[in-house]
Each structure stands twice: as C-alpha cells, then as structure tokens.
Image (cartoon, helix red, strand yellow):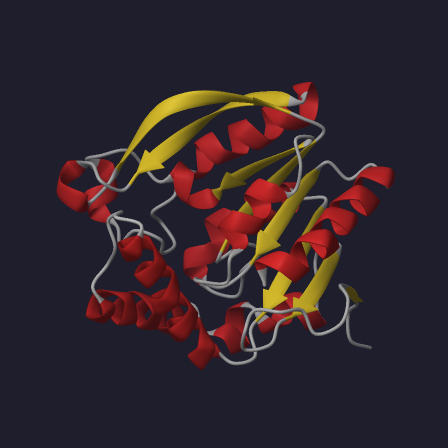
Length: 229
C-alpha cells in the first residue's frame, strides 16, 4: 500500500488545499499503513495521530487505550482550532514504552504547515452514545478520507504483520494474542456496519473513500462519497 497509495493521498491533500480545506481526517483500520502514509505526505501537511492525544496518566488507566473515551478531546479540539487560526500548534507525543507499557503523553512539539491531517482508526465514526463526544471533533474537519479494507478479517492480518515488522526492527511489539484481542475489542466496541459504513453512504462532512486489496494496494482512485437518495 505504501508505494502506491501515497501519490493518491498527496494528490487528495493538494486538491483539498486548492478548495481551501485545511483540516483533514484520515480514517483507516489498524495495520493499514495510515501512520506511515500520513508522515510521508509532505512538509506542508502536518500529520498527527489521534492516539497522540490519549489522556495522560493516571487518567488513561481508566480507559482501554484506543477505544472511545481514551482520548483527550478538549486538548484535541484546542490543537485543531489553533492550527486553523494560526497554521501552527503544539502537539503532544504518546510514548507506548512508559508507565510499564501502559504508555504516557510526553513532549509537546511545535508543528507548522499549510494543512493538518488527523489520522486514526476511528476517524469520523459515529452511531453510538460513546462517540457523542467525538462529533465536535469530526465536525471541525473540512474533509475526511476513509480507507476501506477488502474485509475486516484482513485487519487482524495486517496488524499482525505490522507488529512482526516492529519486532524485527528491535522495537517493542505486542504478542499475537494481544493483537488479536485488541482488534476484536475495537470492532466489538465499534461495529463497522453501524459506525463506519454510514460514513460512506450518509456523510455528514465532505468525505472520500479508497478501497484496498489484500496487499494494501489501491483498487482504483479516491472516490467522493455522497448521501444515498
């Protein structure tokens, strides 16, 4: 996916910039390569992960990391509003190795650019009470790109592959059983048919989609999503 989807994402960002769309969202499942892609888009695009906006410890211990409720939404809203107004903001970084592996937020970093790209697996998700607090975040986005896997079974496979690569590089990686529990928990908490498919068929903000094959390669071009009649 990385080699072939990047030009499509870069073109999409450039087209959005030409229409004055400054705050962009990238919704893609775990293991799909969204973090790598977002970091390669270009210097004019500030890429941040919603997971860098986890609550700091000890408050994070009250939530399962990655699921609704684990993100510091007031701080994320501040980041987005500052960037829209000034083209720059301070963004925290989340270090998964801290707090005995539970992770913690560290090091606010200055970021400046023409556009901000917010990437996350739950970007734009709606349809459940637990997501109500995220709606003001999604409404701040000028445009959303949704990456669609060939099936949700591929998500677990992709995530296992990503953890294997991390392990080979000598970094901390989750055990395969932990990866399986994580992916199953994500989709049990936010069922795709209820929380993600409406993004494609009944978008509330300007939304585009990109379908991937089993090797994370694009199947065609990025397509606009329109509300069903």
